[in-house]
Length: 375
Image (cartoon, rainbow, N blue to C red; front, side, top):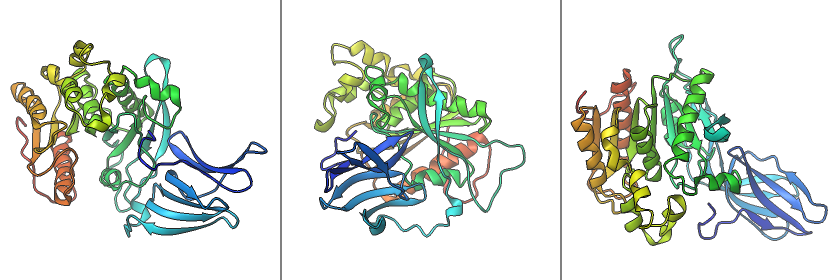
């Protein structure tokens, strides 16, 4: 949602014109609206995701934008000449575009006869091809927020998986921004239900379409996305594995001890607390951890004040009691969200190693293994 300070998706120009960004099916478009004629002119620009835009009030736009093959950059657009200049790039990858998977915006049927949206990335690596007749494993990403949205900007964290033979679907489940008010409001009072069902239905849709191996589907997410992941693994049996990064397992604990900026956020997503305490309990995976039925890797910062390690430890106890394969990777110096480069690298390599053991393949590169209990 547009709740960040200084964020703007429109800017005033001269002669009664307004530059604006609009979203459609997970992609952003830059346009100029003529307020006199009411005509909308969508501009041809090499970007699919926009952050803020500004103007000089006349004919020049300044913006932050990205595309599936271009990392976020700050640029300037002269509307008179349609000339674009990049002022500052956030990342110069030097990576051949032959390694980048382009996202396909997909629409798929979901619960209650509704439609949901996602970005599907097929596996891609110009140096390798899959064995004949073999479908790729699928990694479902549940974004955080939960009322934010995933975008089609270049994310090396997605390309990491697609270059290693995974298909990835990044789900903009009901409640995500960018698809209109009615879509965003689907999550009102339904967090842990709508988001989970949409992630499941995205995976099933791709399996039916013949894009992925239905027996090797996993789900991953961090924070609120980790909550969706844990709900999918506890309350459903669709996925063969999952990865929770500092995932919320206890909604009541979150409601009682969250940070000021998101205070009362859960009241619109679940219900007022403590009046709806029983609903919070019913939606909290931590109270139903005995229903886990597949391998899980949990990654947790020990300095996390928002989702304390105790929540992960309860899930671990349940996995250990049921003798399900699991891994627990704890980072003593990390809080809510990993910041240190070495820890970020370690976490994603640990996750890949975990999947390699669960799904039965050998990673192309060598790295330190992670201990998997009960395997």
